[in-house]
Image 1: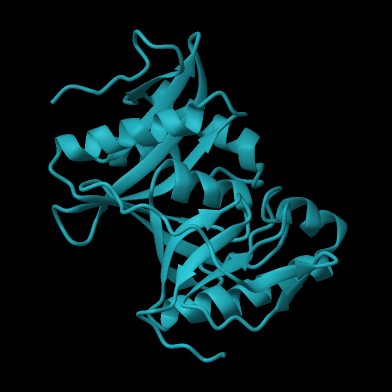
Image 2: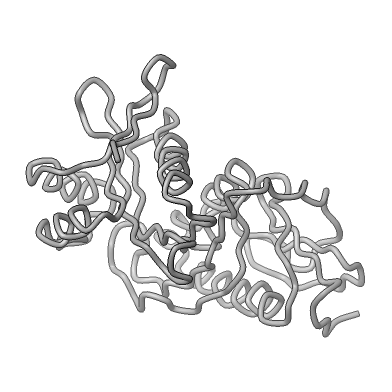
Length: 261
């Protein structure tokens, strides 16, 4: 089965699977530029093993320079799912989207039905990208999933994550337009409000990464509030059905347990 390549005739980065040790070492250098974790996110030999065993290791290139990469492996249920562990890109320019679309084509070519990954629910741009541009949906809240990370993005914060599920077919239903705010912003701090509707909004801060550097206490308050509200809703059976105005999760509580009026 040949490697998939995107961005051939249309403008944009070219994406292809990676095989050589030199390419895999470049993946590590790229991730180090993005996260600066102090130690490599992967050992090159692990990337080689994953690639050789038929898992997904791909890079995005512009003019021969690697500008993004993604690493994923097969997951449960066997034969149906791929778990995307890390996807990173330098800057914008549609690199992340090109990687995810290539990953989707790769998964469909192998008969897979869904791709999962985790992301920080407090990062607005990632939530918008995952829910609106791709149509994935958070289905599980995972408190402190990776423990505490001291890289330049997480800044020592607890690594709460949501598990995003991207069902590759059929296309997801249109998102709800919105509703009253259940968790909102007041002067840069989170506040829970009364909201009796089935469909509610759970806001997240405008730039949590800057907040971690400039006001760590506020960042911790947002982490705790989103964990309690969004995590509680998901645990109770509610469904995230969209992302409203680039700022808030749209949550349908009609199938879950409601504890407020």
